[in-house]
Length: 423
Image (cartoon, rainbow, N blue to C red; front, side, top):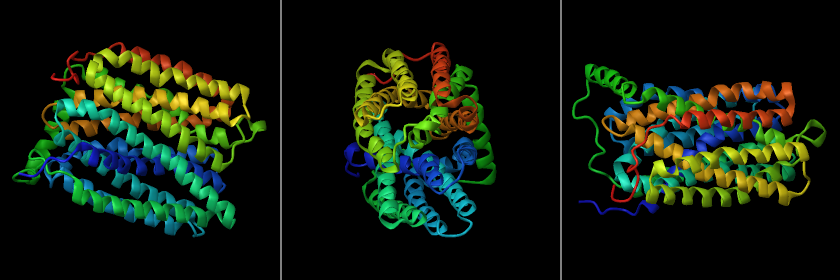
């Protein structure tokens, strides 16, 4: 029997590997296109469409459940993501870079969405119920660390290369080349380190009729679960404020003061999210996981809802005051990232809670599909809304949207024992 590995040896790296492609597609692409001269409206619209693979991934999640193991899918997708990032890097110096890189980002998105299905399913197979609750904070923290590091450290690298070379496409080419190498190393590491849980196995016999039957059964059992309608609305609306904020935060920081922004440089934006943001996020995520493991999801649900919504007020403050002090800006980002790390724990744990039972890997993929849809649609319209009403009113609007999060959360039904130790 294989020796049980410490979850710390693979959970952090696995969820960094899950988070990096997502932030590359959703956030780094926004900054890169901004630096390459693409308009804010086009950036928000076209990168908004890149959410689609995460929205529709439930339609191929049954295949991941039936064919090969979750471990095999996870490692294989990491190799393919390394290739996809290399495609982006080599597309940048071309005269049709916008079309070519968008196509390459689509490749990253579809491959990454498949990786998400496998990695999230693997997490549920490799850990028991209490371990899932205990490590969900670690899991979400390192996922967010990947996103923050991506839009922080990688952006700092790109900004440094821009300044030194004066060649913006080359700077981003090197940055995405580095991402390709990172994923190649991650795939090799996980091929060695990931445990092989007995429950993670392929279907004994796979036929077309079997796949069709399992496909239909997967969706039938998901939508007929108890309180499914409320659960789906929660998945769609819990992050409604963030869905709109995420597309405009970096343009807000990069835009000059006279256009309502903060006038930061690319390197300064990277520094804010790559240092202070990581510290706040890490502390918030770890404390969130510890709280859920000891008190249960139900007990900590409302504090976590407050944590993920109310700190968005910092952007209202920043847009009205437009401070020049990096200390003030960093403090605001710390508060927001801490709140997000703490509050996002409840969201991820609820998805696990609702997915429990037969077909849990596919059901979790369906949950994250609804989560992605909840990010995609508001995000696509956010650019137009911001240009219409300005940054100040836009951030006030996102605070009003927090009321939707509170209302839908009030209708959730959760087992008080879920996630508690010895539950």
